[in-house]
Image (cartoon, rainbow, N blue to C red; front, side):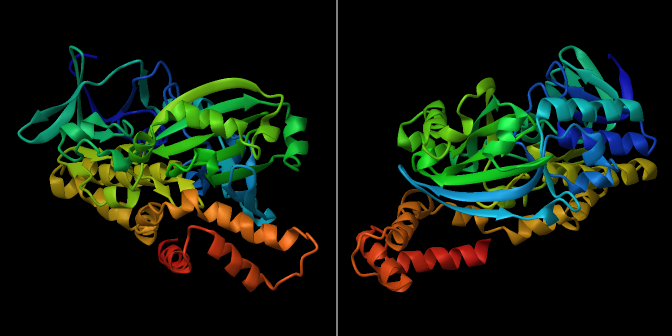
Length: 431
């Protein structure tokens, strides 16, 4: 690929990279999409729930055409304890009309996205590791891969959480542990009919579980379980600083999840298909406030820190797609005008802030601070279970009103009423 020149080089064939490449090729630009893995999706890993309505803007009929697994019509939020769990189970057919979220397996989805790119005219180059940006007079003019140079008028960095291109450009420093989390995920095969019976599903319906508490052995983060067509995706996401402080390994916590009494019956008889780990960003709203551009360069998706964890929903793939649309719009305008300056690249930030991505990151700016509370992971779950135990355990002692039962549970808990009030107020302000 020596001395080849394109309008745009996109580094990373995940969702952000593929969407950006596709949009720019559709607009008539010459685009090359470089992927380090042997194929698109070979190195990508995510929990698996994709809030996918944004994809209809890029690929009309996305849910029907793309290799999605199940349509999420039921969401369960669970506070797990050693021997109990308190779960909010929300099921609503409106979540399927139109489809709000689907489960996906990235190897299949990313491969399909790369095929759409190729059909639109993108040159997809798997198995190529980009080593550095090419710079001339402070302007990014391409990338270097080994001894080869690939020159371009615009480079879009979609190279993931550890974006070395963003670091080389001075956009992101090496992240401290509190900004990072490690995800450990298993995919377990079960017959389709077993999944539908076990989770009370019909047709293509799916369910998503979000769990906190004993499932992560009290470590900040959470656990998830999603239904695919004929498999389950489940795992833990653990904040790195709290994981290190605990002295436990991420695989140990993951195994604890699989053996948890709330989870083990759901995966009984399953066959392990995949097992993997992936670094993720915590504190996305704060990280996204950083610069995302340099002359000739834009950073999108995970590489820009665009993730959002509210404790109720965990999002990244839709934000990646949204950022790619914003970057492609800015790049198209810059290429047509011939202005590749910092000011031209900053149109990306304007487009991003004006989209649902910027709006949602602003709305949930306080969510990372709320999720730092140890009460969520260690004490709130047992307290909630104690209150409900007092309601449902008819041990022939005189019954009390709910307020009295709750007050008694709080008195027996290490959590004070004032702490609970502050947690509730923080939740109202953050979520």
